[in-house]
Image (cartoon, rainbow, N blue to C red):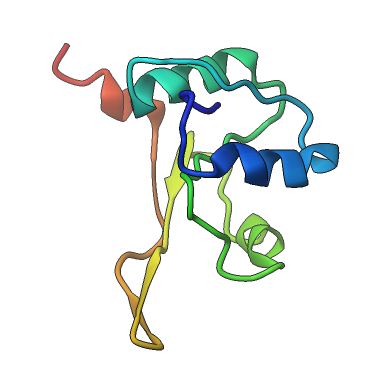
Length: 106
């Protein structure tokens, strides 16, 4: 989902379009609006939210994560690394929680 950006994102999408089942570029009301649009059209078992400029840590990261998934949880989020001046710093670690987390206190 692209919000009609002018940052070159469309060029990257076009470059890899044979590997992308669905995409759209249209004005939206922000990143969360775009995420909600993506959720509505998603067909798979998992959703991965990545923003422009994000990459997986390596080619096998999804395969490696599959070994750590536990069926008792609805949502997983995890490591992100920041690279500055040729150094890599780990900022967070794998976490998980139930969807119920979002409905508590309502």
